[in-house]
Image (cartoon, rainbow, N blue to C red; front, side, top):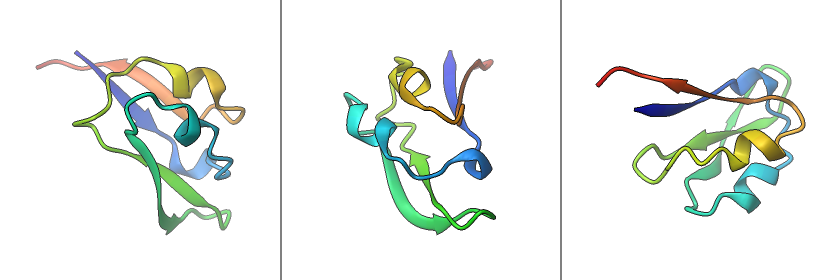
Length: 69
């Protein structure tokens, strides 16, 4: 099983991932990282780990990892 991991400190809130997520699993909740940007969060119930967010992110915020069930 795959899972999307987000590096909140790398996010600059460009929202490319939010706009391109086909399932609407990504959003900006308003929490602020150390650099002063509101960062993206994932709804794991909606996320299908398609990798679109990984491909469109200019700041390498996302990682898709294999997890044990």
